View 1 (cartoon, helix red, strand yellow):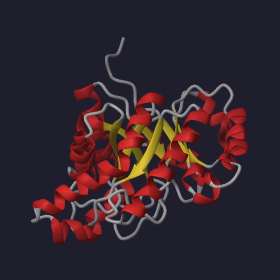
View 2: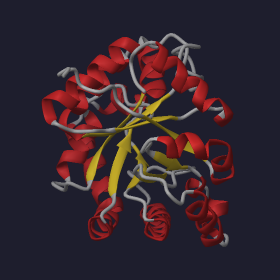
View 3: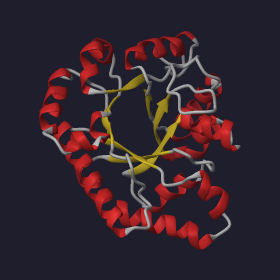
Length: 279
């Protein structure tokens, strides 16, 4: 009997309308799924429960972990404007409503850290602490509700130049329900365009808090959401880092292809499988 660990299992980020095309693939193994409809204000402000009901019907028999991408358009969780923070709290609560309806156990939240902040505020400890304080003011109620619902909030890197900033933010909540997401394309953009470390450094920095990875390829210039293999991300290094975190901490992060063309999800999975990196 081989002692070689099984390759990690890939999942996907999809909209409800994509589920019929990918249902067989999602159900053939317990693949993790992230529904992305519920990040949009026009969905959250509509009769979204009908959309959730359709998702649940299409996912009957699905054994993987289900999550959603939480709302993020047009705001930051560290806004200095208290009225904006109030809107953000309401949006996050709407996202958690959707989690409760769907039975989802994870919601993606965007990092507040920016390249501007890294270059202009990094030397200012008061400014750094302010980002933490504002983020706690915005997320505090969501964290408490996530704990009661059994939902994990994962903080995803966007412009983050320092891989550790949002790891420290997640850790500051002292909650098992606040963890870290790495988006490989965002990390590669930061590496290629702002001088950040390579993608695998973001994975390793997350350590035991790594709970979620968006897998997408880029050229290091923009947020492309290409199929793996179309850009310049060194995928063997990324998956070695993932394997290292999993082995060191006994964790199983959700690994999801997040592509511009959802119809090509299985093509992306096939590329990574052919490279011997995942299944």
